[in-house]
Length: 317
Length: 304
Image 1 (cartoon, each protein chain N blue to C red):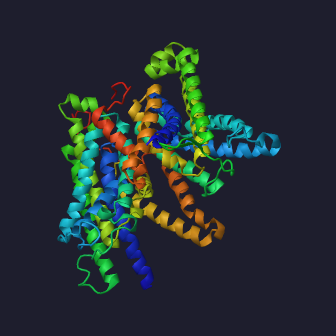
Image 2: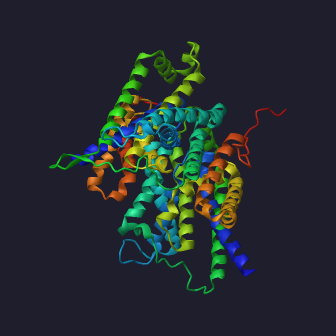
C-alpha cells in the first residue's frame, strides 16, 4: 500500500513537472504558432542552470554558487529564456521552418556540449552533489516527496492561471491574430516579430522552469535527461491534449505519461526476453504513430481550442 | 590537414546528394522535412536486402570489382534501392504529407515529418536489428597516396566521389535540358501558373519525391560503404543535410551541392581544432554563422 502511494506521488510529480513544460510549449505552438523542434534544450538549460546555481561548489567543475533555491530556479528559467532569445533573434524573421531547424540544432548541440564539456557540466556522468532544499529538515523520504509534489502542483496551477489570463487578455488576442494572419496584424500597426519573440522567450522560460524542477526532484541531471526523446514525448502530450487549450495540454500530459510508463512496464513484463532490448524502439514507434495519427485524423486534439469570440459579427437589435 | 580535406570532400559528396532532394522538397512543398534523412537509411537497408538477394541468385555477381569492396551485385542493388526509396518517398507523401497538405497547414507538415522520421527509424531498427552491419566484411586497405603529408585513400572513396559527381551531372542535365526539368522549375516558381500551362501538379510533386528518394538512396549506400549501416544513419545525418540546404539557400540545387561540400569539409576541418566529441555540433555552428552573415543562404532568394 505504501509502495503504491509513493509510486503515485512519484508519478504525479513527474507528470505535473512535464505538464508545466507542455504549457510552455502550448504558448509557443498552440497560441502563437511557433514550432519548437528542440524543447529539450530549453528544459535542459533550466535543469543545468538550476543545479549549477543552487548546488554546492565542486572540485572538478565550475558552478556550485549555493544560491538561495528559489533564485536558482528562477536563474534556470532565465538561462532557458536567454537561449530562446538568441535562437529567436536569429530565426524568427526568416521562413517559418527555420525556427524548427534551428531549435532542433540547438537541442543536438546542447546535449553534445553537456556531454563533452567536463569542466562545465560534469560531462557524461552529469551533475551530482546537489542537496535538495530543506531536505535536512524532513527526514522521511515520502513526506519530502509529498511536500515537493505540493510545491510542483502550486507552480503548475500558477502557470496555468498565468497563461489562461494571458491568452484571454488583449495580448493573447494579438498572439492569435499573428498566428492566423500576420499581414492583417501588421496592417493594424502591430509588430509580429517582436511579439513572436516575446512569446517564444516566455514559453521557453516556462519550459526551463519545468527543467529546473525536474533536476531538483532527482537532485541530478545528466546528458541522458536531455535526449531528443523528451521533445517527442512533450509534443505528443500537447497534440493529444489539444494545441491551444491549456486544460487539454495538462490532461494530455497525464494521459501520454501514463501510456508511456504503462507501455514500458508491460513491454518489459510481457514481451519475450529476446525482444526486451527493443522496448525503447517499440515505444518510439508508438509515439511516432500517436503524433502522425493525431495530425491526420484529429489535429485539434482531444480537447480542441475554444475559439474566443470577442465581438460577435451580428448586430444586436 | 590534407587528410581531413580528403575525408571532408567525401563526406561532402554524400551530404550533397541528401541535400539536393531536401532543398527541392523544401522549395516546392514549403516545409522542412525532418524525415528526409531517413530516406538514406531506407536506401542503405534496401540495398543490403537486394545485395543479399542478387548474390544469392547469381553468385558470380558477388565478385569484387577491381580494388573496390564493391561488387556487381551491390551496384545493381544500388539502382534497385534507388527505385525502392523513390517509391517509398512517394508513398509516404501520399499517406501522410499530402493529406496534411490538403488541410493547408505547413507547420503541421514539419511536425508530422518528426513523427514519420521516428516511425521509419525505429521500424528499421525493429526489422534489421540495432547492431551495425556492413555490405562486405572484407577489409579493404587504404592506399597511401603520399607519406608527407600523410594521405591515405581507399579505392572505395574515389569510386564514391566519382559516382556522386556523375549522379549530380545527370541530374543537372535532366533539370536543365528536359521538359521534365522545365516543368519542375516552373512549378517551383509559380504553381498556379504552371498548372494553367498544362502541368499536372501532382505528377511534378511525385517526381520531386522520386528524385529526392533516389539521390538519398545513393547517398545512403555510399555512406554504408564508407562507414557502416545502422538504424540511426538518419538521426546522425539530418543536421548536416539541413546545414547544407541552408548554406546553399533553399531551392538552389547548385547551392545544395556546394553546401554539402562546405559542411563536409568544415566538419572534418573543425575536428583539427575541436575534440572529436563535438563533431555532431559542428553543422549547427555552420547554420548559426550563416544565419548571422547571410540568412538566405549563398544562392537562395529572399523569401518569407
